[in-house]
Every structure is written in structure tokens, then in C-alpha cells.
Image 1 (tube, helix red, strand yellow):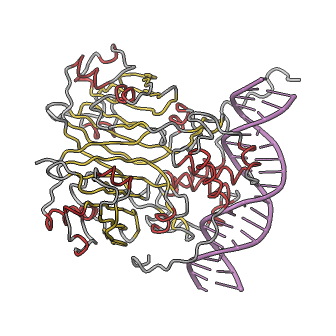
Image 2 (tube, chains in turn orange, purple, brown, green):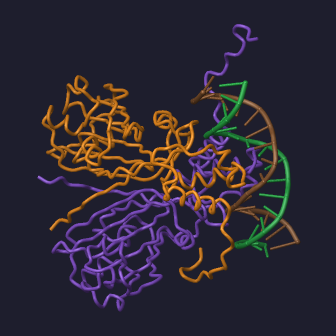
Length: 250
Length: 250
DNA sequence: AAGTGGTCTAGACCACTTG
DNA sequence: AAGTGGTCTAGACCACTTC
């Protein structure tokens, strides 16, 4: 690999076609030509407008998608992305409150809930005694303004909330744990990085197979430092901006 | 006309070709067929191996790229990604220490440093009195194991560190501010989300135009709550996993 | 000079959604 | 039935890197 700083700049060639198309589309979007949430014209129509093939046009659209300006509804077409939800991943305030506070309409939908053995990976991650130890496992989907934006898996050690499955799970888990089981979170460990959707998540969010995603994992600890809950969230990457206000010790 | 019971074999559509190619490549990568950091065979060679066109092959490669398993060096080819750097965006520990602690080799390279007017956007962001107020502006590039992984812009209010430009800027700013100017950070505000590279950053990181990126913005506040420094980081998205250990108040 | 990745064309067929 | 997005082919030319 070359040493830092010694690369010579070459004269820049003309912009490739797909970048020029992107720039034009960005200008159209910023100019309000397409309203938030509205559907773009069909690919064939856009390709004709830019006198290019669909392949090139799609290359431009994929750039806009990666940048979060537009998104796809699988097999339906391209839509203008609404503003990102500003989201504090520490979960101090729940998803429902957060989204509502930004003037958007949140929905939480519990798709599946069961008690099952933790398994080796999860037992290690949550510091359980045995891989066979029973945990609650929830699969939930969350919506903003009628658009599914994330799939979430919650895994909870059963000992801290034995009657969990009898509760209403279409709401904030943090609130539920606090009010019904007296569980207060003391700290959490977060991991997040970009990635792609698994088939299961792509189907649930109605995105194309192999779409990119933003992965967010949160391990919550209880008052005595015991691991209580593991959240694994797969977001549509255009839907969120992670925000955090961190106070330093001392 | 359709006779009863004529085609019932398609329970599910077969996987698209580019997904099957991806799966095969993932298996090859996991099987250690290609070492970390090594170069993949040429696109034409891979396309021949999978009996498909380069277009389809590149579709599969782009999935692996989005998932962070491989990356591109512009015009040079595809390489196997090393493990992600685990990175605490609060900057309590500097980049240099963080990377080194993970057994990797960090380099910080200051590309540009100047004093200049803040400008309207920056003045607002940093709570300055006037857009013409002078700030220090640094452009730096950071490397891990000889690979450029991020471009960073630092903007600092000059009043807290008037002699900054006389210092060695190829190191940790946090450490520099503390040791030379007695500046202790009290808190920071973080924003991060996926996006794409601007041309300038793509050139500096030697990635293809329009590559995806991970954007991380950190506004640092001093002891008296005054905004001191704004960091804007553009990461190669396969290079990092953001990690955070958050303690709740109370 | 040969080979590579980056870009682009001009088609095609299919499964699916919409009317 | 028509139109759409998703997928795929079989070429091509260029700028760039490598030899």
C-alpha cells in the first residue's frame, strides 16, 4: 500500500453518466419536484427522460437509496424517504415516545413470542448458566407513519419477568419491565454497524432481497448488574439517525 | 387451457443467481479460501467460474461489500475485509489507543490545517456569535494496518486553543487539547447514520465514486458547557463497529 | 501490451401488481 | 391485459494499473 500523502492527483475525467443522473435527481428532490413519501415515475419512464438504459438509471437510483434519499418497496417502486427518525439507542425513552415526540406516528407490532432454550450463543452473550436455560424470545416489527422501519428481536432471561407472555407486547418493553416487574436498567452495552438484511427481515420489511440494513444490538443490565434483556434491531438504513448525548465521568 | 394439477412444483421461486453466487462466495470466505486482506480473483475470472456475466457477478460482490465482508480499492480490485475496529465514538480514549489496543496499527495523518471563518452552518452548529468568527479547520485521514479507513474534519473554536496550528496534529486531538491547552471535555453530542462518500472523501480513501460510508458527528463541550470542537468522520462502512457502554443516571 | 475494473448499451424474460 | 420492477445476457469502450 502506498505511503500516506504521496499520491499525485490526476486530472478528473468528466462525471460518469450515472453520477450526473443522480445529481439531477437530487436537484429534483431538493427542489420539491417529488413530495415526501410520494412514488417516483417508473424506471422505464425515468430512463427515457435521461436517455439511458434501465441499468444505468438503476445505478443512479441505488446511490440515492444508499444515501437515504429514496427507498424501495419491494416490487412496487421507488419512494421519497421521509426525514430520518432521531433515535437514542440507549432506550431510556422508548421507541414509541421518541417517534411521537418528533411528530410521527409509531406502531409496535409483536409478531411472535415464545419461551424457548437460550442456545449456546445467546447463553454466552447474556451470561446465563446453561445453554438450555429458558428465555423469552420476541419478534417485533415497528412502523413509522405506516411504513415498516425495523424488525426487532428481544431475548429476556425468564427469571426476572416470569409472566411476561401474559402482558401486552405491542408497546414499550422498557416501560413494561419497569411498571410490571420493577426492573430498572442500570446500564447497557451497544454495538452497531451497517450490514444487509437476512431474507426473513427483508420479507417483513417488504424490501428487496439483499437490501442494506443498519444493525443495532443493545444488552441491558439490571440494578444489580445482571444481564436482563438483549435487543437486536435491523433498521431500514434511511429511516434513522442515531443520536446520543454522552456525559463524561468526573 | 390449464389442466388440473399441471404445474405445482414451484413452492418458492428459486434463489436468484446473484444470491446463490453470494452464498458460494460467503462459504469460500468463511472456509478460509481467501485470507484477510488478500485480493480476490479478477471479475472476469470469477464470472467465468460462476458462468455468468460480469454484471451479475458484480451484483453479488456488491452485496458482500455492503455486508462488510469485502471492500474495493478503486480500480485495483476486491479485497477481503479485516475484522471491524470496535470504536467508542465518545472519544474518551483516542483513535490511536483504541486501535492499538485491538492489536492493529493506527496512523493519523493531518492533510490540511488552517484558520478560517466558521461560516453560517458551522457557526450555528457550534454556537458561535458570528459566522465570520475564526475557527481552526483540520482535515485528517486515519489508517488501520496500512489501509485508509476514515476521513475526519475537525473544527475548533480558536479562543480555547489559540496556538493549535503550531502543534503536531498527526495524533490524538483529545490528548492534545487536554495536555497543551488544559481543555477537559464534559460531554458530547453524537449523530451517526449511513450515507455515501462525497467525491473528496472517496478520492482520499481510494474508493469508487458513490461508495457508501458511515457518517459520525461529534460535538464536544468543555468544562463550562461551551462547544469546543466538532468532529465529522466519514468511515469506510466495513471498517468499524460502533460500541458504547452507557450507564444510566440514578 | 495485456489485463483490469468502471461504465454503458440494447435488448430479453419472468413474476408480480394494478386496473 | 398491461405495466412494473427484478433479473440476466452478450457484448462494448475507456482509463488505468501492471508487466
